[in-house]
Length: 339
Ligand code: SF4
Image (tube, rainbow, N blue to C red; front, side):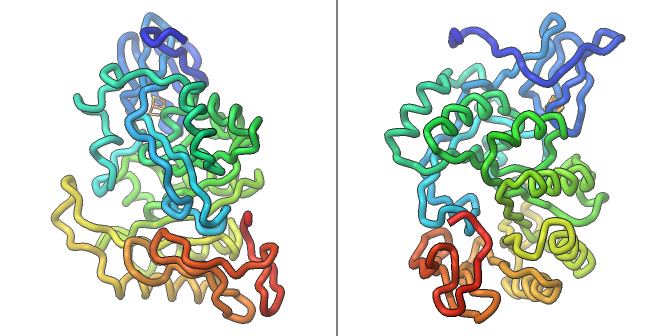
């Protein structure tokens, strides 16, 4: 593609009234001529929907896979991590607000175009075992992730989505064959909280988690505990039960501390005891692997059968891996994951 050209989007159709229906995420925006969707990264230009952020990267780093966080997927490996600007949600406490929300600084037209082929050369040079589409919302740069994912698959490199899970079913139908692992951020277990603070809907996210699981994608779940918003026992219990019953008791759950952000600074950081309390609820519900995030401790993996320490971590850094062929070396229990 010529860097000055625009990339036509996938997953859209004309409506009888002349607008365009974008089918990429569960907002299903109906976009009039000249207008953009809620994410501000897709525009109806003369009756065609274009992806405005295709190939416009705002971040590219080589990270430990544990940073995603994925603790049961190729531990200790490097993941080539990229982002284009944009998000389909507006979470008040977003930790990456500066690059996830459309603004003048990250206007895609001001970012240099980098072709998938060019990025992939860097991926190969980095020796990373996976490409992570992360930092912002990969759904809103889907076309680019699809292109790169096909190149990765051909070279035996895995594809990872770190996502809010609000994509459409149509998008997953297209993309699931290329996706190896995902961390989905389930932000609350209350639809009112979802609508009020992020503009999304809980059920769509839960349904997509089930689709990922059913398709055999390795799935881990993250919840950022925001005091007074999503940390009450009802929500924690409900979410733990959902994971156990619908995704499986072996699904790792990361419970992370929130710290005040520019857009949401009126609430204090999550007390450590809140994280421990939520972890206890998850454990009592039957979850086998629960981790604390954004704090010291709570990042090691224990054997659910004999309680031996299996994988040691200092926050996102691997300190030791005692697994033998994905099994506990003491009692030989199989540990769920991609090792
Ligand atoms: S990706 Fe979602 S938010 Fe963006 S235009 Fe399409 S439906 Fe709207």
